[in-house]
Amino acid sequence: MSGAGAGPGAGYQSLRWDDGILWVLDQRRLPGETRYIRADAVTVVADAIRTLAVRGAPAIGAAAAYGLALAAAPAPGDDVAAVRERVERAAVLLRATRPTAVNLGWALDRVLRSAAGQPTAAALSERVLAEAAAIADEDRRINRALAQHGQAVLPRRSAPVTVIHHCNTGSLATVDYGTALGVIRAAHEAGQNLLVLVDETRPLLQGARLTMWELQQLGIPAALMVDGAAAHQMRTRGVDLCLVGADRIAANGDVANKIGTYQLALAAKAHGVPFYVAAPLSTVDLTTPTGDAMVIEERHPDEVAVVGGRRMAPEGVVVLNPAFDVTPAALVAGIITEAGVVRPPYAESLALAMGRGRSSKIE
Ligand code: MRU
Image (cartoon, rainbow, N blue to C red; front, side):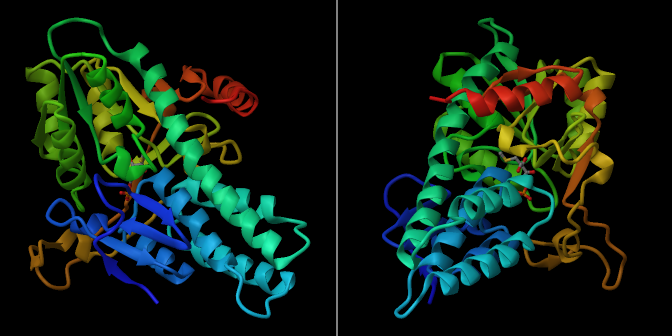
């Protein structure tokens, strides 16, 4: 059983586990309506990920982990083999929902590994939930650490620092606080004078709907613009830096992120604007050598052709709708992680940071 509900109370949270239920903020309805999906079965979670009710690489990972916890909930007469089989089937279902964000597979594998060898159905079920909760808790801590490291890339001055941001990387895209938007948020909390230029992020307007909503609530000065305005702003206004998130970072530093990121990075290069990526190390995939090996999700043509329920393109036209693109490492000035700001050459620095991230405790 599932359904929509008023949700988990004051403020907003992308997702929250409460007494055997995963509450998922339905981001498709924002900013107009704050409604939570009551997920009490893994199929509801899979559907929420597939339809972008929950989206953003870290939030997808945490939601998927809790999806396994739902599948692992003990039913009368269950033995350990039955629960294990249900969890494994749930992992297959969840893994197939979206292909590009590596945090999804990373979270599923982490939970599956931790569940191995549990002796009883109850122990297995408890372990799966504990690991999902650990992933969510770590995400909160990691984002705050990452945001502090990110302060090093912002110019220090009293006049406003102008930042271009693409897509949504805030609390909504994570369990809490955000990645690139977390860096911006921490700077604002430290008293930095900022102006955030927000790409609307076609086709699904994560920038207009979600990032503007979050920035408005945080009281951070921001202006919304169409994606095509970024180069113009760089040429005419002076932009200090671009700050974006990531869905997968290859071993050589190539970055998959929301479609439009690559052209933003190209414009930044042409105007001498530093282009930074902020992401947890769980977004780094050392098994993918370069961006060429990444699977880029293609989504339904209607996401492009239909806007606000109205068809904008003639019926039957061919539509290309890649949800992500790959920004070559050569365009990326630095990758802000919980282990520090990683600089080129990325083949060495990312491998080092992954080692450091694993061995250092992030408080
Ligand atoms: O399709 P979406 O909305 O899931 O795409 C999200 C992005 O591309 C984000 O920039 C990325 O996941 C980083 S979120 C901290």
